[in-house]
Amino acid sequence: MVQLYQKLPAWLGRGSIIAALSCSLISTLAPSTLAATQVLLEVEAAQFLIPIDELETFVETGTWPQALRPPGVLALIQEHETFLRDKLDDTIELDPEEIDEFTLADLKAKDRKLLKELIPNLNDTLLRETATAIDRDGRGQKVIDFLRGFPQDTITSPHFFDTLVAAATTQSTEADPAKAAIQRFRVSQESAPNANDFETNVLGFIDAFSTAGPLAAFYNYGGAARASFNGPLALNANTSHLFLVDGSDGLGLFSIHDVPRDKNGGRASMEFQLLGDTASILLQDDPGERYSQDTTGTLFTTQHQWKKCCTDGVGIGSLDGEWTMFVEFTNQPKNIQDWLVYSSTPQPHIALDLTPELRVRLDVVIEEELSEELSEELSFDPLQPVPEPASGFGLLALGAFGIALHKNKRGNSQRST
Picture 1 (cartoon, rainbow, N blue to C red):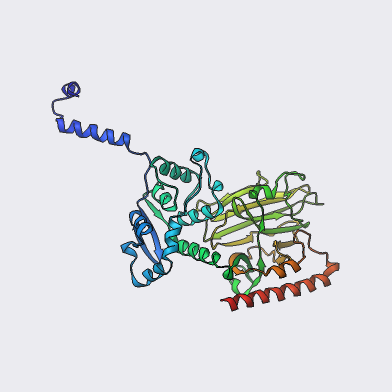
Picture 2: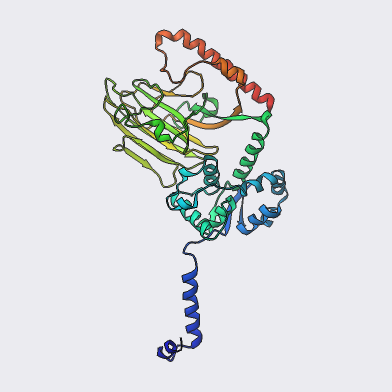
């Protein structure tokens, strides 16, 4: 140090040298990534900037951040205090030895859903950086640790509080069998382009198909029928199909055109607009077609052209929380005569209008679970094709039964409320 000091120009003072060396040493030892210090959130349409230190104090002691103490807000917090603290203290399960290759798909579905809603811009890269930071700093793997380790100073999470309350309410409901509920999906279509009258044009309710594996395995692209959907659903010729699948990597929306080995090909262009969540294109049928996804993960377009050998389609996900998806054909499809929505539950498929720019809305609803006895009585197979017109009488009878069932369920739901 003395020799180095003697070789430097005389105008550099000893204090400057020590300060420079100290800064160099500090920058060498300091971690290269930022750590989050605050969360920007909304409660009752008002924005609040909350230090993560105060959130940690809330988890440990129940003392809520000073900024969130207006009477109305505080009353909501106190109502759910125990559950809010529990959700922030939940453990996110991941293997430290696999951090370098970890992705969102490797998280448990409930963990992925919670983290994506609390940190809307979370992706695979940011997840790995966060996991690396909390592992390096010796933190635990709790939700609050993930917030602290996120590599951006401010986490912008408009629905932070709502997400925690929803998770708390869900946990409370699951703990009480008398309040058991299931997630269903409502299908509506506006009466004219941009009419936006979905509430008065509800066509029905559907349930998601379920698979233990990933969504791509359910689609089974390129199986027995090359360059096509090879999943367990029976498709219909000259038909565009919409349905939801809940897999190990989350909930996905599938759109599939036509059937393999049809007598003709076809062409279709579509647009998907997502509200209340972000997603990505999970699979492409075919990879060579034209797909686009905006930078926010909320707007998707597809342009498909297929031959008589094959299907074309797309899978979008994962869809978490109380999302809404608008779907439309942007121009008249070629060799597509019907547009159907499939459900995993025993009911006829829902028919949609193919008019270009006439939007279909899919959104989330919560309904009471079917009684076990009623479920056993239903024997309709949702994996079979739609009946031919000659069997129209049977379809009408089944439709009447479906309407009566739906009214009964809605009545039960209202009484339980």
